Length: 239
Image (cartoon, rainbow, N blue to C red; front, side, top):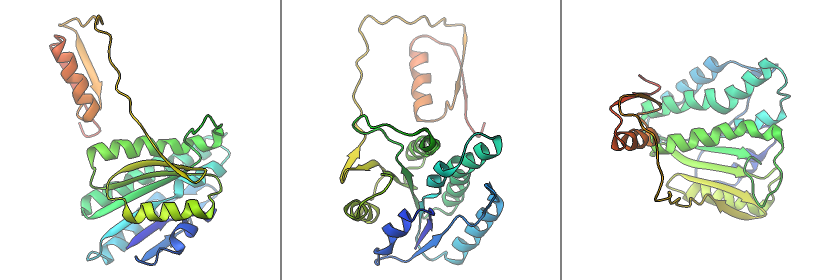
């Protein structure tokens, strides 16, 4: 079963309208009043729903981040609302999914990724928080996340069909952007450090690494130890 946190612009409805191979439920952002979200009610209702469907595989499609571009982020209240849409609520939902163990989540953003040097409007950038969150989640809990897809401002029908196929057929975490009816993905280029690099790592100093128990933090700690550092402190969200 699919639970779709649907956007009010209709993109999610267009995507799921013709996916008849799975059951799905469109959940609109009715929990918002005057751009203030009742996160507790969202999570309580979400918990109740998945508890009532324990015997069904649960898939989440999260489009609510798209709603943030409609907000004038010149006040603290509106900024907090965008943070709720793009990081607080996705985190709470994901934590519940990890506890259950047989769920997956796909994130959707709109016009946040730079392709062919096209301009990105500032009002879309809050959704970029979801990309950082999704990448971290793919490293720490790869079985939970199916990926994140950045859609154009107004997807054409052929682009919608491509997204539908990606949702159904993508088994592993993918980070994709749809533009001009093409699917783009991230390419990582290996960086070769200069052979004569010199780093001053005093061995008796203390080195604090936030997020040190994660994938990147662990490798930084290992690198520091290899350079002679004796005192390394690792912290994480849970310690």
